[in-house]
Image 1 (cartoon, one colour):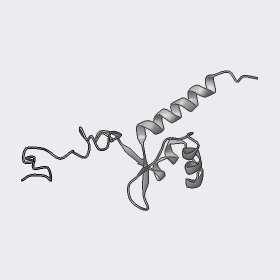
Image 2: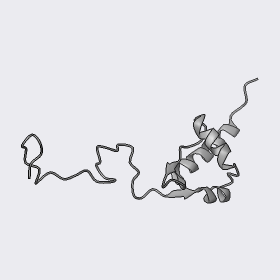
Image 3: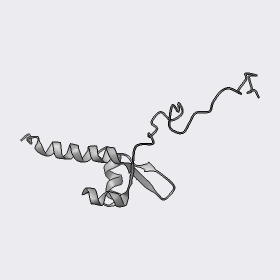
Image 4: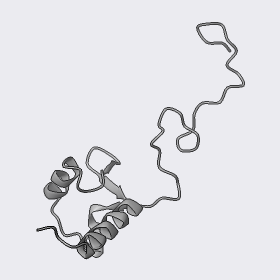
Length: 96
């Protein structure tokens, strides 16, 4: 089996979906958890879907992961980090 240039392709592996995939360097490791919109409420995030979209677009909330045409989720560790940053910002004195 050879490609258009005549090079042998038998021993070359195609890039995997997660590990070592050069085509998708921003891949998500399998051990990371995704959290659906319904899972944000128990974490204290009570924004509407539209408000979350606005915050994401403004760079003030983690970007969603599109699972299908009608379903999105967020990486749970990024959500937890966002919450921790909000708590840390509360402790900072406000400049007058």
